[in-house]
Image (cartoon, rainbow, N blue to C red; front, side, top):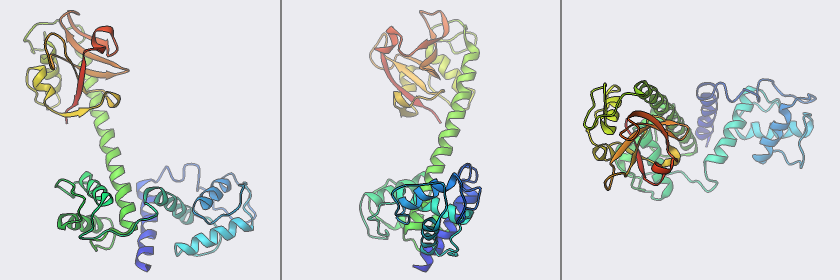
Length: 311
């Protein structure tokens, strides 16, 4: 138990000062809150303590009174912090982490270890997979590969390397994989925006069947030419390009995604590049060259087939 508490304290410090240095204290946590103070942050403090079960009043105020102090003391005692009743940065960071933990970790959670099965095991495997620590298909069974990946994760994150997923490990794993996914998404969006910007440089270049020369294009030749500039090799054919990359739902389109349509023949027979604002850029035979068209235009809306994202 003591070890778990220590892990949570380490987690508080690490997340507060490394993972989220600007967001935690942007509006809440700049000031140390004490008995007798009136401060706008006191309302949020009371709300969070109430959510965690330490503040039992029915209303919240901006005044830090004895009941708020008692709630802070009880919270500090619960996480093995100095119970002085003052809500300083360390206490406020611990409260934030506890609130996140409450949201991220099921109340029924029991630690996971070798031999366990279930949906939560699969979720842990997926988190580890996102962090490139678990390299096989998630199975929902806590096998040797899962234990090995958990040990690696714990070792690199200042946690006791037991191979057992306790609350501290699950919380850090959840936040870590989420941060990784966000970073990856931001990186992909930035790369896609560069692709879309480059694609627009060829607006007005004339259409020519079978061409990918840079001086003229057909639809797939144009897409092939643009992506080649970013080190992505695609075949010269809409159907070949449609079979590559990863599927993207229409609602999740980002600039730089390739969009496909069924036009003169069944399957992927026309392709362009999404540029945002529900529009795509493409080499159009009817348009005479590279143009930008709305996805919801009367012709293309009914012929939309799907989208692909190339890494």
